[in-house]
Length: 139
Image 1 (cartoon, rainbow, N blue to C red):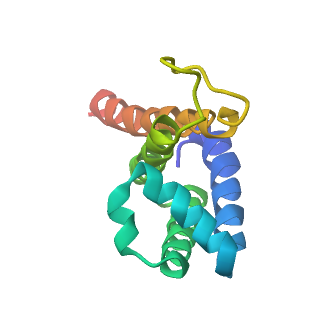
Image 2 (tube, rainbow, N blue to C red):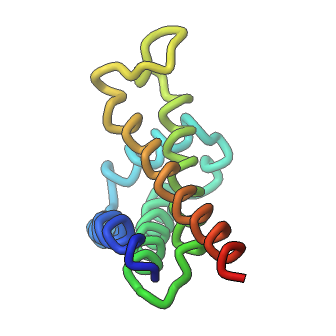
């Protein structure tokens, strides 16, 4: 892990790890609600039952958090996971009614939380691109 990546990886990694661990026991209405919102943006997810979806989401967040926190995991790998996960959240933001003002990318009050997830894509791409360009400069 490059020293310059550490603040980004630790802050986002700790957040992801905590979020994933808190979803481990998600069941009932909470799992159904989270699943329902995801299905609204990505209809294919309807094939997965809500409790299983919650466990998969939890596991994904724990894996990304751990990848970012463990120093010997390359920044490119952590950044890739972060970018893919963040892109899914951006898709959720773009496709969920009421998250954006009509005919605009500007978030409504309800959409601010999801709109902020676009930063995850930027952070992930930064880790990936820096890893790629650093390798070229070193050789």
